Image (cartoon, rainbow, N blue to C red; front, top):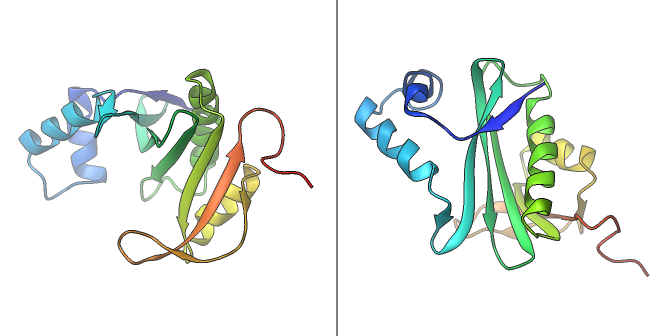
Length: 155
């Protein structure tokens, strides 16, 4: 089982060794400060540590796109993958954003990221299967999930 929690300054050493080895402790402390804000660009936001016991195994986030739509991000660190942490984290994030009043999650998944595609399918997200270009020009698939108990669209 995992827990989602805010990052603490005491996590800096782990973050440096697992994710940002080129950053100084001061730079990581600044990152943690930014991550612990509740808004980003004027919209609600949360960046959370994925903790398994006392160990951080990755991070996940949600971001408000509109009053009813949020998106997720998840990263499980090297050496911790294929243990179900991303699935557990996004399952908990779904409940978190539902409790914050969101009705839909919309995620962009890189078209070549097979693990993330499988994760979104396992979490019962829907896609139209078309490949879109993101802001950086990369190929992505759009995945949607209604959090209100029904499908987004039914004919």
